[in-house]
Amino acid sequence: MPAAGTPSPPTLFRRWLLRRPDRPETAPIELRSRRIYVLPTAGGLSFAIAMLAMLLASINYGLSLGYGLVFALAGAALASIVHAWRNLAGLRIRPGRSEAVFAGETATLHFIIDNPRKARRPALRLKLRGAETAFELGPLQTCAIGIACAAEHRGRLQAGRTVIETRWPLGLIRAWSVFVADVGCVVHPAPEKNAPPLPESPAEQGGGAPSPQAGDDDFAGLRPHQRADSPRHIAWKVLARGGPLMTKQFAGQQGQELSLAWADLPPGLDAERRLSRLSAWLLEAERSGRPWSLALPGTSVPRGSGRSHLLRCLDELAYHGEPDRADGT
Image (cartoon, rainbow, N blue to C red; front, side, top):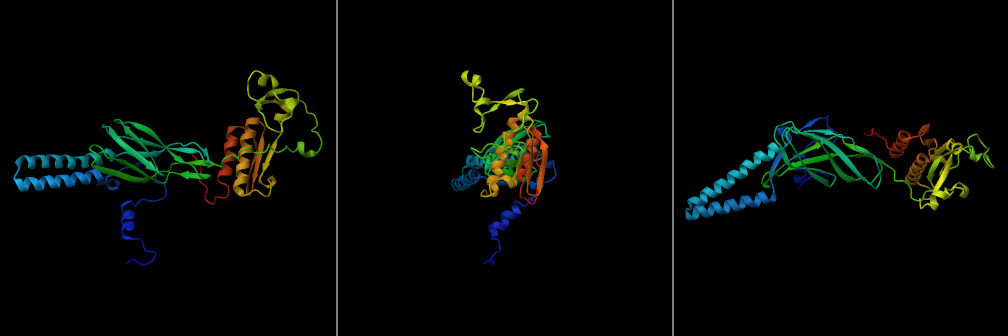
């Protein structure tokens, strides 16, 4: 009986069979002979039992045709072992680009798989994190394969151990390989639903009404309406034509800088709710076209605007508090 804390024999065998590093392997990952495993499927085991029964019956009754049938079917089954192995041998796997998502959404992780041979590779399957997808490769074809998986928590979502397998051509044999590609995406904090309006800019916090600035009357565009917007800035003509509720945006307002700081949030919010609110505010600030800065404990992002600035700030939220930060791809 194994001592306490010692893995059981089945666990040790499984670790030996699937021995692969947990860290990402250097690309490209080539499926050589030593990393491809072959075992019969449940159907293959049933087929073997049926062949054994037919062989015993042929021996018992002296059936020459029975011998021929058993040996022909057994030969086809043995040949399928080679075909299943060759269907994976030589494939090259590289990481693809995976887009960032918000927590609670579905992330699509991409792999680039090369077929260097002048033979097609049918009936292939890719499995990771409980999800799988089927595909095939033509001769000398390179294909980008995406597999969807749940992004439950913020941070870096790594593909981890991934299995590529085939049961071609007869379904009697399963050939598979395990690899760890450097495939992943950034998972941003989910934006808070019904978040409060954006905080006031430093100019608006000075007390009283903000002083007029040149360009306050210059119309700059429309943005989605917020509950705190003044009724006189609502685009009533757009609403009368059946459009959505929009707010007029002026050049003077567009130039007001926002300061989104962790320390300015209500003290009753825990860390994840703070990140969720900041995520919602970042999206709203980007839609409004106003420049903003972000201040978190231990890091800050200077004033900026635009899509790239938004992604940088969201990445800071995603990795906040994580000791080992990985760069997103």
